[in-house]
Length: 325
Image 1: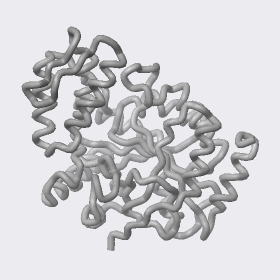
Image 2 (image 1 turned 90 degrees about the horizontal axis):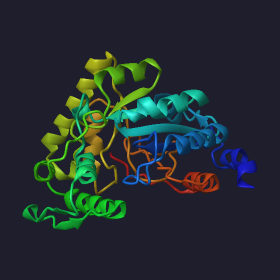
Image 3 (image 1 turned 30 degrees about the vertical axis):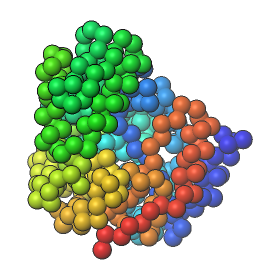
């Protein structure tokens, strides 16, 4: 029944105009085939019916247009946007052709320090564990313990444990530990997971919007305010130099309010010249929402009925509105 009435229900919950609500969905990677070490990352097949669901149930807009219409209280009924965080190359090579088939726009938020062969720290952990030889990883010299890796399930558990141990270390310490871990294992790490400069230009040419996601993807509450301002300014300047246009859109790394970023960071984003910013707090945005702390929804569902139900719940859920001013 949800399948039949889905567009009607989204219209009732998100009628547009002054009562409009904006659903912003968030992805990271989209894989061309299943990966046992990334079981919650959608494949192209799953992503295809996600896009079919959005195309049938929502009016999907470019993010910049949606924000402009949110401000003017002129959103269409069932308004939605599609976003990607970090700047993975598969956003362009795998996800983009699917979205083009359905005529759907999107925004990619790029962490500029990983362009052209870089690798994010969590991916370094994943790929190190993936390629580690033997029956276990001994990271006790780093204070990270010993982890069995005799099966995919054990490797996946090792990845989760190591990432959780490293995630909230000070930025420099985390990077040092990740590099030392890779050196201990001697793993050969990929150099093609992230977008290249040419990919960014090509994506923009097919009307994918580009936003900034800092340079090095630090958790902003873990670095100084002066470092934050550098991360904001340099990521914006790099993308503007590449694309020869203003970069107005920003996404907070990790993005959880009061944990990964604070109210002062929303002020810094505005001061840096951005026009809006998205978090990872759930809910749908309204005209009363803080433009520098807009909520997003991450659709990881592998069942169509479950995806539709949770999209409806997300529209219904009151979005947090921690004003920055």
